[in-house]
Length: 470
Image (cartoon, helix red, strand yellow):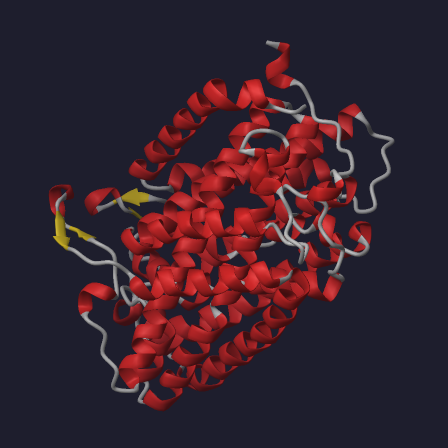
């Protein structure tokens, strides 16, 4: 039984597994902003508005507050344990092996589905952009299977553009971390300019009448048709997807030039910047057009602009989104490959996957990951993917907040380059908030998440436990 909770001692990786330290704090802030600002505001704002109405503005506030608490906990752990692996590594070092496995298995779900979600969101904008140019793809190539009532397939399809963009980003990541970071920074700037353009065009059309009724589905979380949760908190459980991404920064610990300083700046700085961006864009969107108009759109911002009589600007926004959304894919595919790399080092995955290429990147695990997530992106609907991805993230956030509290008791004198302020309020706030958001997810999502981890435990006892290198 003790072996189930044995803790990992963090040491230097073997030479063949070491990553090159090429990233400074501006790269990490850009990685964070690139990972955070993406599908959540460009695509999922439509899903959130459909489920909460104008109260989606408060959904952003609630989800942002919970993520802010989690981000402060991440910043402390990332600077205290500056090693790749994010919540998985922290859990292994603080809470024990089996907890680390559950967190790592949940992160596998989170990162895989985030990449898939963003790829599907990118596909929606790319298809809209091509349509604006007069290029119309066959309908069956633009979406995965559409489910009807009774779990039968109403319409078959394979999301080919989503698979394409995952392949492009995976290829870029195998070339080198520094090169990827430079391209990511340029695309982040383009993304911010695009959102600023949307606000400049939409904000003058702000009409308070579009905010009534403000809470058509209430402030809580109420199950509707098909088990979908409506209401402000129901939307917050989905909008939550819009804020995480800062955890991808913590996976870059072994590639940061000065991890004790750079990781805290990257995590906290990106959260502050993105929260401000989200609130401004969401207010402009909900105020400009009634939520029922864009609530079910795969490209809500572009649709809002077309509704305002700005088709050319809508085409520009769709094009910029199609170009810039891959920064989110890059950030999460990067993060997932690093988590898989550490799990392979620890023996939980085949050790051969941990080998580093001559360019200093984990090329093997990156390509395997790309194939894995492409299957989800090609065949699973957007709202289902996002909801299930959130469940995995909530698990990881709870684990990191718990690690902070345990270490504050176990080793209060440890050197902490960054200390979570008001830790006995912030960390419990993150745990309670994440648990409440989990209860606000669809029941099918909750059951699927539990089933995923049940499978994970079977894999752990059948394969991982005997091979763990701890």
